[in-house]
Image (cartoon, rainbow, N blue to C red; front, side, top):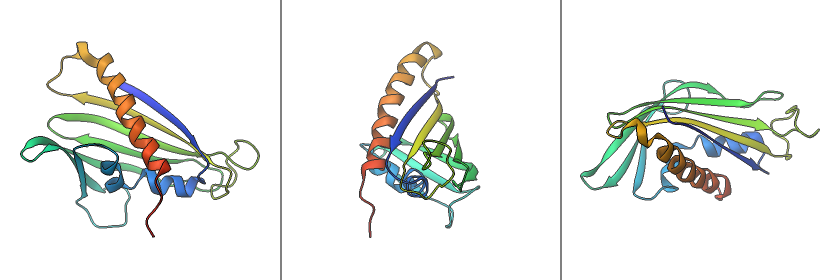
Length: 160
């Protein structure tokens, strides 16, 4: 099991941050040689399934994921989204938590205030063909790749 955690603070209010980190198509735009498609109808929530495709043409693999927990941030409460990876190559899970910073320095009493938020992304990443011996390397690469993707999601200018 390769579990790693990424934490980022942002000036974005919790609701805006949540919308960015749960925009599955936007995730793929942050990673090279990757595309994503949501296979279930909107709105997003428990049961949403999406597939991330990594590779070029036929040389690649699909990483299907399903949302199994969906609790957007609300006043006084962090938001949590948990995904289960259901692929043949990549398995495991990811949990993304958006914690409102709150106007009083961290209580999270106002999830829509302009005081910012913190994202905690925890991932259990398993790549089936790789031996467990490489788990530390997978964790290091995962932190870097997913950290860059998270940085891009938080920095991007929303459409419209």
